[in-house]
Amino acid sequence: MNITMIGTGYVGLVTGTCFSEFGHHVICVDKIDEKIDKLRSGHIPIYEPGLKPLVQKNVEEGRLKFTTDLAASVPGADAVFIAVGTPASRRGDGYADLSYIYEAAGELAPYLEGYTVIVDKSTVPVGTARQVERIIKENNAQADFDVASNPEFLREGAAINDFMRPDRVVIGVSSKRAEKVLRDIYKPLYLIETPIVCTTIETAELTKYAANAFLAIKISFINEIANVCEVVDADITALAKAIGMDKRIGPKFLHPGPGYGGSCFPKDTMALMRIVQEYGENVRLVEAAVEVNAAQKARMVKKIRDMLGGSEAGKTIAFLGLTFKPETDDMRESPSISIIPALMEKGARIKAHDPKGMEEAKKYLPSGVEYVANSYEACDHADAVVLMTEWNQYRALDLEKVKKLLNEPVFIDLRNVYDPKTMKELGFRYTSVGRK
Ligand code: UDX
Image 1: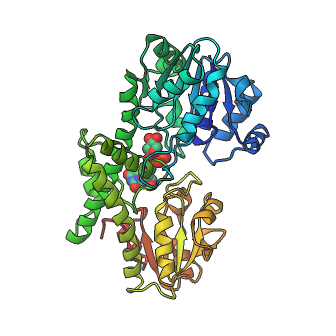
Image 2 (image 1 turned 60 degrees about the vertical axis):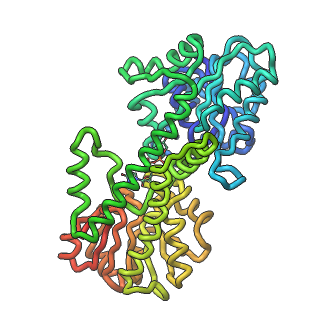
Image 3 (image 1 turned 90 degrees about the horizontal axis):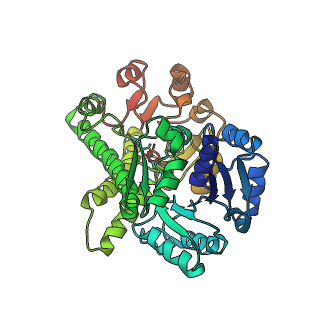
């Protein structure tokens, strides 16, 4: 099949590359010359494990191309995917900014030739596909096309695997013709028995928000229960394991921590709240999850302060990990963005390390943060160490060395990586989330 992917951000690049790996011919289009030039010369603008070799392979085998020429990319495509950004709106009310989507729809319309399915891949409010349909008709009355919705459920850091072995594929269509095109595109997954949920466009659009909102609620739930564990002397690890064994609850997304971040959960929960408001409805559980998440980040600041004897003024704190989760360089909405400045405002000095995120971190954190080359340099002469993001390389630290380097043996483990009993036996003043 011939596929055109508009937008070479995270979703567009991963999706386009994986489609070419399926054997389809994919053209990825972006407006930014520099980005396309870099992609053509083999430079991948994001860090995503496994993506670079997959891009290289499919470019070499002639199935994946990058261009800025939309006019030459649309004719002949069986499907044009719109995967441009939907940032939180400039109005600041949580509503997704759809201007890039509508712009893409208007621009591609005149070049449509033969039957084409226009697929919304970006996360968009219910009703967006219908607007895309209207815009295309307005710009090309003769066009033979259908719109469809095909939300993505990729996790950063695991996106290739999530794409190649998804739990399910969701397609929202309003015609059998469009359904056939999308089913043909996803045929390689059908052969490995991936369930395909084929539904209406509106249902597909809402499914994405519902899935992300549910996961955000699950994380906020376990964070609240972890906080309860702390006050009643219970252990969140055993508790999460026990409730997770109930198949109705499931074991995933029950890790307590400093609060969720990233490009999806914060944005999509806000957008869902905003969408339902327009219909006079509420999503009170989602509102609560958002509030709990903000409170969790603030609680982490207090936890660090308490471990420093009640004040962070004049203290040096080592931060291990800055990104919102491991295996990504993405800093968007990372809890570190609120926790670190809150400590700095009260006079703390921060020495930070992250395996992939330090360049990005510089754009989000105050300029006073000192970035160092490894975990041990961060701990050297620090008054406490905070394990912020559970990168693998922080899971097997030489703890004797860490203790020697620190001024005080204070270890604040916000991801519950280490065993509290062992840490105390090693002589650390240790705290984590939801465990004594
Ligand atoms: C998420 C969804 O998982 C994905 O399906 C969707 O398409 C985009 O949003 P992503 O944001 O990449 O993916 O990361 P994810 O692995 O879901 O983690 C999100 C945040 O939740 C991270 O900050 C992570 O640390 C946190 N988290 C996750 C927890 O605090 N506890 C958990 O048990 C799981």
